[in-house]
Length: 159
Image (tube, rainbow, N blue to C red; front, side, top):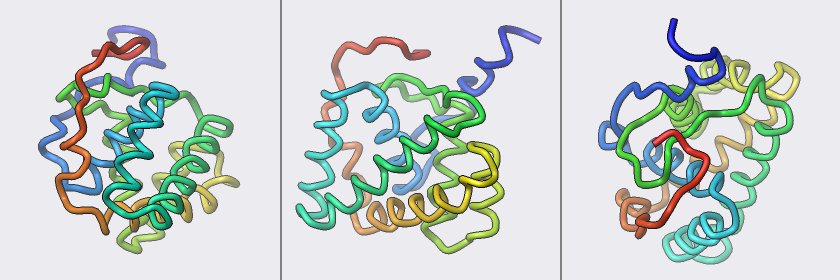
């Protein structure tokens, strides 16, 4: 066994390019959000540009609440890679799969994954938020998050 148990979620399990649009967007947006105010501003700019202000705001609000609940009630902090990293971490893959399942109406499967992320009593709430967020992502043109200029210094990330 290499490294402490809490770093396993950062192990590379694939590449971002292997994900579909909703999954890739959810990972990129999670990374941006986790980077703080500058990343969050980029996220809002992208959502409002591609979805319009109203739909973009609703999508962002669902995502903000989803992230806040995951942070507050998470089983452990989600590990992530830097925004420009091409790797896909294990926690990121789990999050992407969760959002995609919730958005496509696979509620039972999404709820099961939600219980891996947060306490069981919070799982229904984050599943609903993930569905709202994922539905917003489905309305974006497929490559939107990949159009962002992600070349900037990063801190506190794996790669």
